[in-house]
Amino acid sequence: MPKKNHPIRLVLLILGIAILFFGTVMAVFLSFSHLTPTLGFGNKIGVIPIQGVIKDPDAITEQLIAFRNDRQIKAIILKINSPGGGVGPSQEIYSETIRTTHTKIVVAHLGSLAASGAYYVASAADKIIANPGTLTGSIGVLMEFIRIEELLNKIGVEMQVIKSGEFKDIGSPNRKMTDRERKMLMNLIEDIRNQFVTAVSKGRNMPKEKVLEIADGRIFSGRQAKILGLVDSLGNFQDAVNMAKRMAHIKGEAKLVYPKKKRKSLLWNLLFRDMIDYMIDRIDRRCGIFEYRWNGEFSVSD
Image (cartoon, rainbow, N blue to C red; front, side):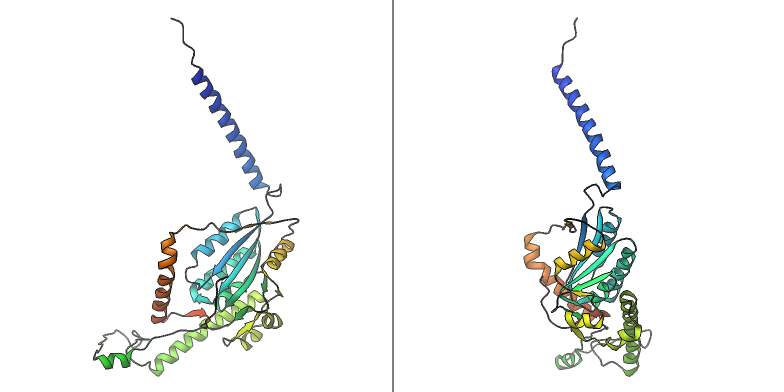
């Protein structure tokens, strides 16, 4: 019995072979272009926004590592608009930025506000650009406690604390802080401030004594910061892009690559995000967290 022709099978077979062939060619091409990014694909600058209070460093440090390992990314810009934040998170981002500068150009652009821990991070960059009116500096440490002793007395509530050591309930909201406790915390704050001063001294290549002269928490404009050596030049974000291009020897236009944004529901963004952030901030202050943070009020909505 003669075999029947199967034109559909033949067409599918040819189509499958064509897809396999073109898929292999594309894989080889992409692999080759990744290894040699100068063939039209390497003029890219990674941009990492650092917005708001610095609390969780993971997203920023992970993005630094990703851009650092991407051969098509020739330089990185830290786009900073922040009052600072936690000591640990600021130090983690600083350390990863320093590590990144060993292989990639890193430029920090300071927006409306880049104070305390935010400036700590910026000082690790190869160059810093600020607007003339940027608020920056605030080199120092703060720790806040809430006291409700008088309120508890008025409503007739008494708290009993059983502790294993003298300092176990240090910062308790229902009693005054003792002189010994205050002295101990001041020693801690001084040590953490010195870590800040050392980081700025190293990052900005400034004598430690010079940094100590201004490490009293004061805030500076971008223009004042340039005079003091805390900032390299004045300019906007496009000036930072141009500087990154020059330092990375990028000719022509450069494509700006931003981190992929995680999608969140509109309801979450409108109703819950700001409220949750505010509550976490209040809880952090209640717990007496050491922070590299400017305590003033200023818009960071850039």
